[in-house]
Image (cartoon, rainbow, N blue to C red):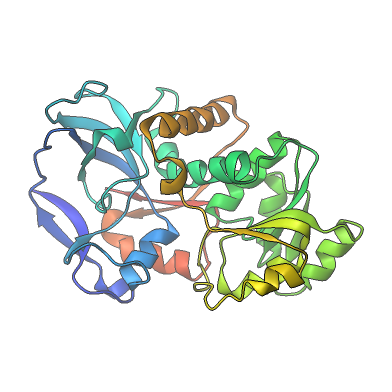
Amino acid sequence: MAKRIQFARTGGPEVLETVDFDPATPKAGEVRVKNHAIGLNFIDVYFRSGLYPAPSMPSGLGTEGAGVIDAVGEGVTHLEVGDRVAYAQGPLGSYAEFHVLPADKVVELPEDIPFETAAAAMLKGLTTQYLLRQTFPLEGGETILFHAAAGGVGSIACQWANALGVKVIGTVGSAEKAELAKKNGAWATINYREENVVERVRELTDGAMVPVVYDSVGKDTWLTSLDCLAPRGLMVSFGNASGAVEGVNVGILNQKGSLYLTRPSLNGYADTRGRFEEMCLDLFDMLESGKVKVDIAQRFKLEEAGKAQEALASRRTTGSTILIP
C-alpha cells in the first residue's frame, strides 16, 4: 500500500484527505514513477476549488513530480526501470508516493539536477520557457512587466529574462518580495500595495510603456496590465491567482492601443513529444548552466498538502514549494 492525496468534493484545503491505495500497474505506453519530490502549483488549487473541473471524483491532485521509474508498460522504449525522470503534465495524481502516467509525458532527468529541483522547476520552468521564448520571443534589450515577480514562475522568469539581457519590471506585494525579485535579476520592482503600477511603469519607461505584460494574477490586474502596454503590445494572461478574467469587451483592446491578447498554457505549447523534449532541453540547459537557480522556499510533507495549498493561495509563499512523500 502507498499513500496519496485525494478529494471527493470541491472546496477549501479541508477537502483534501490522505488515503492508502494500491498503485496501478502501467498499461501499454505508460510508466509508474516512485516520486522523490512533488511540485505544488496554483493549478492544483484551481482543481481543488472547482475552478477547473476534475475528470471524476474522488480525484487525485497534482501534475508535477520527479523520481525514479519503478515499472514500465508494454511498448515503452525510451525509458526503463531505474531511470531518473521528471514530469509536469498528464493525469491528476502526482500528490502520491507513486504516479502512473503516459511515458510520452515523462522526460529523463540529467544526473546533476536533483529531484527536488526538478519537482520545483518543471511546470514553472517550462511555463517560463514558452512565455519568454515562444509566446513573446524576447531578443534582449526589451523592458517587460511581470506580475508576481517573487512567486514560483516569477522567480525563474526574472533570472531567465535577465540572462537574455531583458529588463524586468516586477510587481510584488512587500519589501521582502521586492528584495527577492531584485536578487533574481529584476531591473525594477513595484509594490502594488503602495504604488500606482501604471504610473511607475510610465516613469520607468520614460512614457514608452512595455511591449508585453505577463500576468498570472488575473481579475485584479487585468485593466492595470492593459494600461501598462505600449500600442500594439501583447497582454499575456496565463493565470487566475485572484480569480478568472471574465466578461471581457474586446473593444477595450482597440481603445487602449490596438492591443493583442493571448491566454496560453503549457499543454498548448508542449503539445507534441518533440516540442516537449525541446522545451525540457532548454530548461535543463538553464538549470545546469546556473543561469537559473530554483529557490525552494517551502517544503511540506505529503500529508500537509492542504496546509501547503493554503500558504500558496494566501500569497504567503515565495519561490517554489514542494511536497516530500
